Length: 249
Length: 177
Image 1 (cartoon, rainbow over the protein chains, first blue to last red):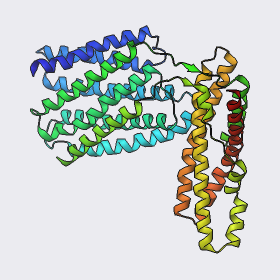
Image 2 (image 1 turned 90 degrees about the vertical axis):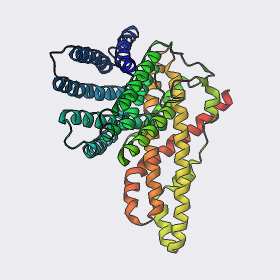
Image 3 (image 1 turned 90 degrees about the horizontal axis):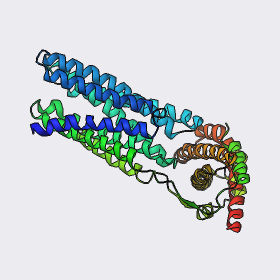
Image 4 (image 1 turned 135 degrees about the horizontal axis):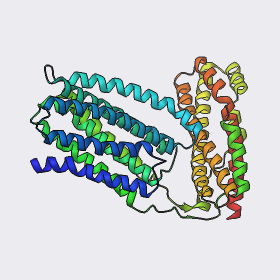
């Protein structure tokens, strides 16, 4: 169990280094700056926490505070990634404008649900910092899962094709956030010793998430092959004119 | 213990849904001529008649209220069919537009971009209008009519123009292949 915990703690963060290399190799830094910053920050956060964990001069309380502050910053970056994915998916500005209110309201509703449930699950008399950590963790995972679900739903409904690395980023976050939602509730309910199992589930999900990112970043993207005549320039112009007439309000 | 269990089920359900939605959303190729053949012809005049406010008013005045409600219901269901058809045509246009975006000619690629934008917006509007029509079925009173008519009448009329164009182009594409 001890080995497994350390493996799931260390391995994903080492693999995040490969994600950074992949992003650089595919020249995605300018397209996904938040995702790049998130990956780099997670590595730094891990290095800081590992150092504090190993050095005896730091107390458990200090470790917890740095854990919570790091999580707060990480959550902000994760929402930046969602913003990035939205802009990447809905290249059309007008479409993004139409969908933004939906995403805002979804986020607001999920924030309420997440906070209410986290507050309900908080252990009375427990460590306040640990409770704060679980509250932040569960609330952010609920919001992230909901927003990603809405994004996936819209791409399905609107028949938008995803570019390969963007699918990978969204899917990785989706797996990680959904498993977090599924397991985070058990943390305070079953006590700190038994919650090691929950931790393991979450860390394993993060490992899978990083592996998904690596797979999508390093697997060669197949260019779609179309056969047939398709639309010619004059057809496209004609469609544009007619569609524009129709969608202008 | 109940809330964590509910969250466990919701989390797993969300995961399954995301995997399902993500499946097949990568760019795929395909036969463009086959796609163009899938564009469905629509009777524009009949559609215009279905959403005509004056026609509705005429029916309201001349028919007993129960008969009017029954006919309105059928008219709205038929309008929903037309709108779904327009949305499906827009989905095909999105794929055709994506293919055209790969064209080496920058003019074609730029035009395809605009086409994609408009087709996506049409699909979004279609998904906004259909629930309103269904709501109109549930509440056939006048209260919903202004929303539907004021907001969507214009857009649907323009849809009709577009659908006529779709019909025309589908025929052209079929004869070309």
